[in-house]
Amino acid sequence: MASQRMKTLLSNAAEELGVLSILHSSRDTKLLCLQRFTRLFAYGASTLILALYLSSLGTSDAGIGLFMTLTLLGDVVISFLLTLVADGLGRRRILILGAALMSASGVMFAISGKYWVLVAASIFGVISPRYVAACLYIQKASS
Amino acid sequence: MSSGNEIGPFRAIEESTLAQLTPTAIRSDVFAWYTLFGNAGTACGTMACGWVVQRLLSRGQWSEVSAYRFIFAVYAVLGLLKLALSVMLSDKCEPEPPTQQYQEVVQLDSVEAEGLLSDDEDIEEETPKKPEAPPPEMKRRSIWPVISPQSQSTLFKLCLLFAVDSLASGLAPLSWMTYFFNRKFNLPEGQLGTLFFVTNIISSISNLAASSLAKRIGLIKTMVFTHLPSAIFLALIPLPSTAWLAMTFLILRSCTQSMDQAPRQAFLAAAVLPSERTAVMGFVNVVKTLSQSGGPVATGYLAGIGKFWIAFLVAGAMKASYDLGMLKMFLGYKSREEEDETGKRVNGRVDGETENGHA
Image (cartoon, rainbow over all chains, first blue to last red; front, side):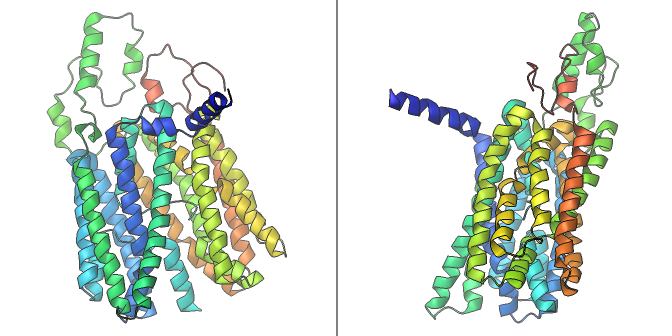
């Protein structure tokens, strides 16, 4: 009896939290969620060390601040343009393009230390400093 | 942190696709899990990266530059993984072709129904009123999206509100909060790290609760009733002079601070036509990002003159006014999908009343 009640409790909880919705969702939905996890995993890793990497390459604090502003603005423009044409050109194509750019910019960061190369790579690859990390850095730099 | 905004085209496209793939009833669930996956991803990635870099550097053989480059190499590999996942997506992710709608209109006109449906069908801005629809090829040729007038006005109001909320988020970002706690109460970095890790976990889990709430009282009410308390707690944080009380307010705030994210995206998806979603979401992201970027500068200035608390108070007040604005402007708003359905369904509402009528 108790196990029956436990099962009902669990299945009610599962339904409340939407577990069933996600488990029964289509393959595409699951793929998209996995993509998001992968992407943000990569983002979390890169964003943690972006400012540190630039600093270790010898960039000045002001240079780092500029980097962050430029990539923020560049990212905003590029992302917006890509979303505008996504439906027209094909959503999957743009997602694939975005992933390719992401990968390419990772390669650029791994092999090059030149400031402007990195700026370009991070704009096109949408590598962004975590917004808050940027603030922390700028705050530290200005104090 | 709290506005959960991410730069890049992916989110808008993914969310628009998800909205298309998911029936309205479970959309808030799916969005909640989608958001959760995102938060989990960032948390795991940050942690893994920190751990890996520390290990590499502690051995003494890797230089700092090499260690960081290794991470970026991993980043590149993850990009390829993501590419593979994108390739595996099916046709269903693409925007639905307009052909189906045209066929419906032609059938209705030819059957000469008693006019039950014809008026509602005309609400579809893209579907012309004449029985002969323009050939689908003409629509396909333009890759730029067309936003219907009704969506434009909705979008304008939403962007205004989101801008206020994002600016407020920018006024109180995570790094300023850690700085505040450090300055005022002399909390060391380790404790701060734990504190904010806890708040992160709590707000991630709360996403799921949001979806469960949204199914009961509707998207708008969920958004407002969860976001409003967190705004109030945010405003209260600078007031106490004891650390534990301030930390309590912080934790209480984190319980509900991101509960409005998934419902917000679900609402946005429902508020515009499917063909407009990607563009609209992309645009909204731009608005949010740009508004948010104005915040830290103001807080920096206030911190410099010792008036840190004003930033939090103002941020809380702005978020509260965003909530009240949402409530006033969008309570009872009918989603575009529900408008398109037959006129017989009179009370289809997004804000909380289900078709069966219980709120």
